[in-house]
Image (cartoon, rainbow, N blue to C red; front, side, top):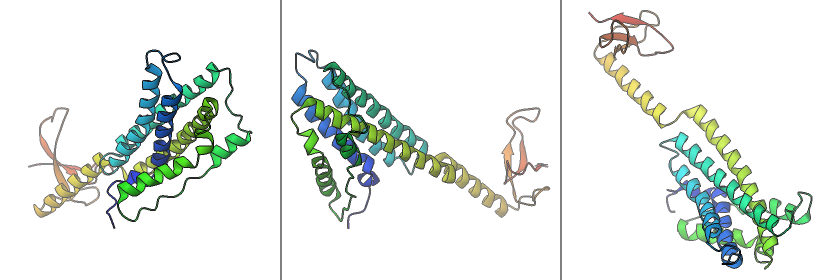
Length: 246
């Protein structure tokens, strides 16, 4: 079985973002022209916003083990670009004197509630994940291949807003993990402190006068003793015990 090196392949958010990107490219190729988009700016803006979503989800997930803060920021960038893309589809509808689907309409309910299949990649992940994305895209063919730009825009507007909500929940889970485990910087600090504490034990450093734990050497950064070494409790800042170095 192939090693799961890229966790984002298993994310429903990444899969749906790819569906939206492909459908947006199709929409722009079919419906934007030199008359309604003479400079091609709308084409560029929509296709690049659509591309940004899966790209940032993938990059953010790839940074999971090294920087959870970066992971959250990139996921939020994906969410922001999808909100921008959703507004472009809303603008298309309004330009054509058309309203977005009501949340009570049958089409809205069908698109919003249509579930994606769970990824089940046994091996050859790049091939199988690509096939999975296309299969999920075809679930929405009734609307995306209708030949009616207003129906397509409505479908993509619903999918964009649906994914924005999914990414919001994903960021909440990332934040919960960050609160529980910390990030890369916190892990490095903990490892460094553990190493210094062990070295202090080996060097027979004195015990903290307050809690009895091993002490480590630190350098005062301010005050009248700035630049001088002193003994500090290894459990700082929970314990503030100190000793002078004689």
